[in-house]
Length: 227
Image (cartoon, helix red, strand yellow):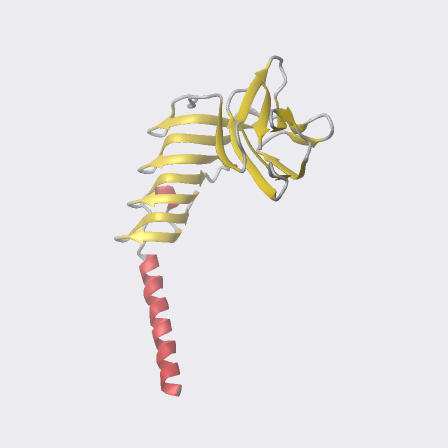
């Protein structure tokens, strides 16, 4: 037993050493990300999902040593980009957070070869995910206010037979009073999520419902959720 136990310890230490050495040889080629790396490797380069910390920080997809795919890059200045990458450059759809003119600012759109190419969306809104949710309609009202208000619908009529309502959004203030459920004073593009519980059509079981959505154009929006 003693010999087998010692052999097991030696093998474990050897494996840890080999893994550590392999990890040390995994290189990130983006200059400002060179330093520490944790994640997947291929042929000595960061490849797959990983996290790199150098002067700047990045967590997300890598390919052949460079950010490539989807990921979040945070500069040492505090600026941040969340979105698509190609060969170490912002390329595709993404959101850029920065500080300008004394306040926090956000740019959403499309990047080409690390340069902002303008707002990128084919529609004014998008449904990203739904669970136990039927049709979702988005209506933009006239006015100068910026808000997102939610209506819960069953069989073509507004319904209040829901419970455990949980809202989240990336801007604005939440409200779940008798007047409305939603977000006031929001900044666009707006990303929202709502979860709630409701009985099914036969009143025989409780459904856990969830909707995730984005609205790109500023305005006063009413989102009708049929469940």
